[in-house]
Amino acid sequence: VGKVYLVGAGPGAADLLTVRAVRLLAMADIVFHDALVQPDVLDLAPQAEKIAVGKRCGAHSTSQRFINKRLADAAARHPVVVRLKGGDPMLFGRAQEEIDALAAAGVDVEVVPGVTAALAAAADLNVSLTRRGVARSVVMVTPRVGEGESPHAWARAAAAADTAVIYMGAGEADAVVAALTGHGMNADIPVVLVENACRPGSFHAAGTLADLAALSRRRGDGPAVIVVGEVGRALALAAAPAFAEPRRIAVAGR
Amino acid sequence: VGKVYLVGAGPGAADLLTVRAVRLLAMADIVFHDALVQPDVLDLAPQAEKIAVGKRCGAHSTSQRFINKRLADAAARHPVVVRLKGGDPMLFGRAQEEIDALAAAGVDVEVVPGVTAALAAAADLNVSLTRRGVARSVVMVTPRVGEGESPHAWARAAAAADTAVIYMGAGEADAVVAALTGHGMNADIPVVLVENACRPGSFHAAGTLADLAALSRRRGDGPAVIVVGEVGRALALAAAPAFAEPRRIAVAGR
Image 1 (cartoon, rainbow over the protein chains, first blue to last red):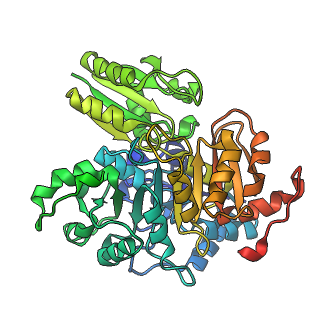
Image 2 (image 1 turned 60 degrees about the vertical axis):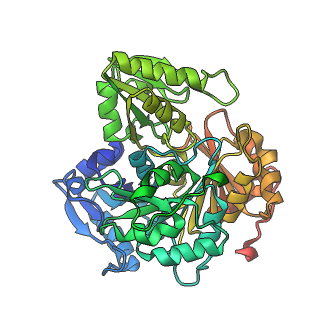
Image 3 (image 1 turned 45 degrees about the horizontal axis):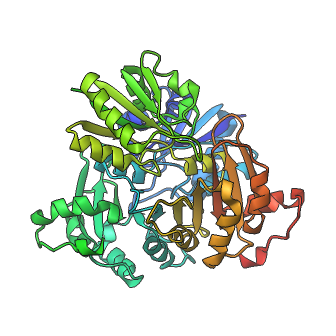
């Protein structure tokens, strides 16, 4: 009887997986992976059968219940089953549903943590998310909520933290801005949009919250996070002259 | 002229470093490391000079200005200088002060992200920090604030998020509970204290916020985080019978 490893694939670059993740991929009999996992990461498991079960925003996706069943079935046939998730499995990855279903089926599960997108973005930008004197709290949120979940709680949490990193929100910039300003966030607060953090094609654009929709139109279709907060002020100031619609940044509020 | 790499050492286990971090350690001429970095991680750089500059809560620490200067001096003498920080460099690591000082000295800096303690704890517990229907926001905070920083902002941010992970707070449990309940958090909310996540000697204890001081007395002196929120409810319920002072967990509030 096999075991299922829920493994974080990190932000995309193959050398930002952990050593443990690489070792498990090299041992895996079968790998179930999200759509966002890059081909060179999958190449770390040349011997394994690969099955895409991911989810990409808006696109076709395999139902979670079906994924759970396939994982349990695979563990009945293979010693080492890897479930590879972009970033870290325990942040916005529906890991709990897989863990609970596997536990209910009597299958052992182990989680291997990974580098999450917020930290990859900070590394790309050379911007600490908790700069002393400026930010001592960082919230990771997503405006994508499920059935029965509050559509406003994420924005309240974002507005209360010194730094907010918004996952899966770049495609709905207008709604993000409306929700954040509706919870009292100033439209002059710095934002930095980071696409493909720590990957080839990495792109970032900085400005203020009011500029987010304009910044977002400049991105491609890679995964992106939005960093909101005073930690981004230097980047926002440096970028301001290049804006399509220039805007003065209120340094006085610092 | 050399380059300084600010590298995340992850939660402690040597195989939870990224492949990029391991490669840089193998190339490093000199490694400046925090006190919490484990010996087997330092063994990944057998050829390098190792210099401990860390900080441990309450203990003697090298002044930040002196660390900045030593990093710049080392880059003038060595091609590859690694500054190794526990967890991820961009969360509670004073990285910005080092990045800015090195930039001012004309030294190239590159950040290599790592696995942060919150995600290591979630992996150890098999508990997602963003379980669907329960939590869609995670805040990482510390009650340790510097001069001129608000002593209350962290608790406000923690109370507004669905899940809060508190860094460097286990040693001051009473103050943490007072701050969180003072910001409207219910004393019946589940908490899980995790010490040495993803390391040998990993320990966790679950209960409610009201129990935090009792839970904290059971830990050793390893690094610990506190996970606060409904995502910990199953662990808190499972642990309740074993409490020194048992307490009913309010399931109705779920």
